[in-house]
Image (cartoon, rainbow, N blue to C red; front, side, top):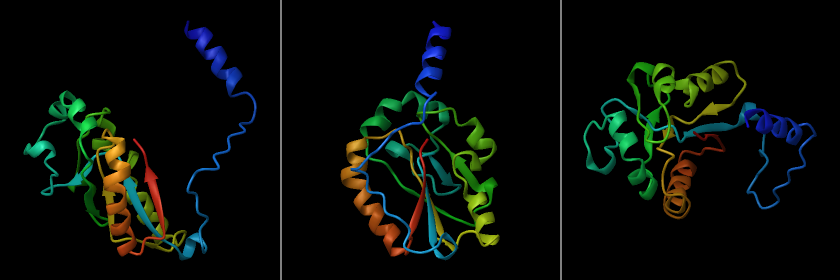
Length: 170
């Protein structure tokens, strides 16, 4: 069975893709990346020590509890965590009911590349970084994310004059 699946995957990806999504809200950058203010938004579930979003009102929820409550996360509205870009990695925590967070605990940049963006900024490859980055648990009600959270979040990002957002889906 594995050989069969592998053979069909090779066959499916052997030719160049012809994917066209005309309905996407893609917007080209209005100016060079070196002059653009960049923001970071990840669905990794990161938060800053001392600023726990306390899902479902549970203080200091463990990763095991988050895994056990995945169905609750999937039904609830997402909670956005604000993370200052100068937050040391040792102050970042992660909790998510939908994936194994061990790599993200070991190196947050795996799914929350805040340090890599800071390096790109110092090297002059991107214009400016918004003072805050953002994260939420991506295992959430997609309808609530789209209809309720997204408009609020966009207003927040616009208030920070973010011109382009790096989106990291997990």
